[in-house]
Image 1 (cartoon, rainbow, N blue to C red):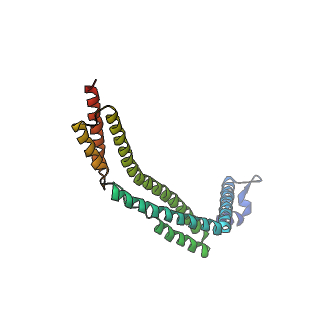
Image 2 (image 1 turned 180 degrees about the vertical axis):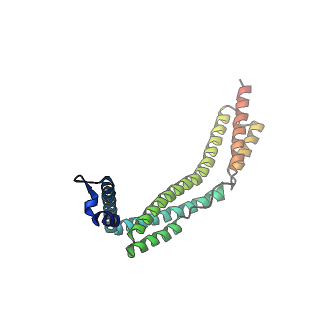
Image 3 (image 1 turned 90 degrees about the horizontal axis):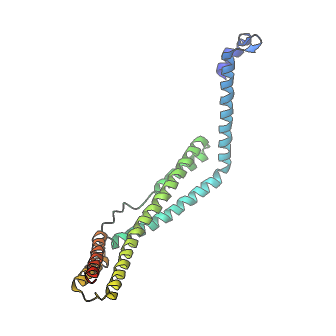
Length: 216
């Protein structure tokens, strides 16, 4: 606007040629028009955000509280998994809630001081971080649960193989019984070494297959 005022309004006659605005003047006015439209759109967005902020902030605070519950659950599940499974490979339990609450307080502060552009940027950033933290927490909880499920699956497979061996008349086979005892001890000792237990169950299955082949 200052450029248009200085260049064009100071000498209106110079801005017109053959009854039309010169290309330079038209270009400046078109740019000014586009900038004005973009600024108005941004202001409208900020105004809507300002009006909706109480509800938006309340929902975001509630979501962070829900994340805190989920992270506490993950910490408990991690503790159980580490007590029952050796070398879990699990990382530190997720703890994003504290950081998110601090950032959310900062956004609330921007809103109190009517710094709406900063409030919008902060709100968007916290929302994105919250989404990522939720996903990460869910993935880690699934990983912890998966370790226990893997142990239980191996226990079930071992029992299934034992029943198959008994049905085939191999219940008294010393070599097979030794393999079974080794696998069972690994699976029912806490913390359970899943790698060793998996190898032991596979060894028992292989020994059973070998006996079955010999019996044919």
